[in-house]
Image (cartoon, rainbow over all chains, first blue to last red; front, side):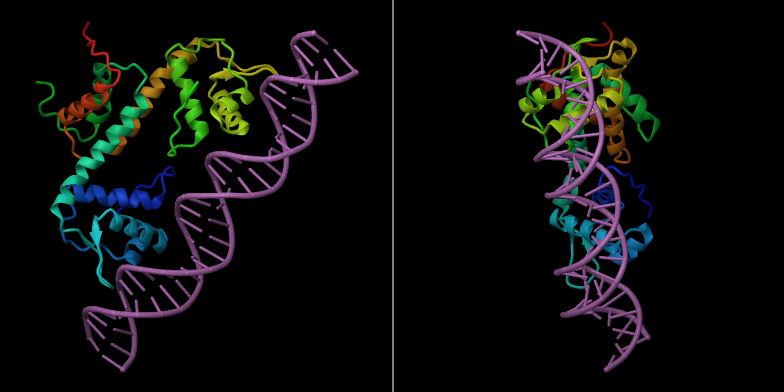
Length: 130
Length: 130
DNA sequence: GGTAGTGTATTAGTCGCATCATACACTTAG
DNA sequence: CTAAGTGTATGATGCGACTAATACACTACC
């Protein structure tokens, strides 16, 4: 597991987002065991307490559950799991729209530029063009 | 002048962005006088030093120029001014794309959601083709 | 010249984050 | 039982970004 940390956002938040993405994509299934705090800290080369903070955050968001002294597990609440991806996407869009609002950008210009950036990566260009 | 501050980003950055947008939209013309630090601080109800930091940032980005003990002025470098809008849009897109990458979102879903959010506001749906 | 208004500089205080070091209670494996 | 591995809790420290308070130097204007 490798997370490319940036310096902008807090590390513990980036850890949370990382796991959120894995859940959203099904790489982490419902009920699956999470790595231990210490193990993950070692692997990511960060402090165990930072990992703990990330896990606590994930618990508050009901993404994981923890019984006493047992490895944490991904929630089995399918309802929660299904909402993760939507939330990630919607939040990103909200931030984005907020930042370009008032800038008088046409939808076409927007779509064009996004396609150019996003398409380079992992875009499955099924459909839109048709 | 009213800026609706949020708690996410530093105030001085939000001030910079605010003026960037005004320049990008031509509400602030080349060579035009900027408000004084203290005046602006009073109006926005923030600390003069916060305004100063914003102005210093704008100077480093060559958006404004300042002669000793005279009100700052918007740069007369048209080249710089023309680039502002592009930079604002491109940076927003870069951040956005970065955040949804790996989420396996189709272009259609993206465009659809953006339209719904963005369209509500100030979208002029004049298409590029025209 | 004196006053008010510029921009500028310096210093101090606050806050969030990350880290380090320990310690505790419990479970599991041997 | 013992030892190693869980999650959890606490306090101290350091650092950097941001904001605040104050003082300084200069200009414009009457």
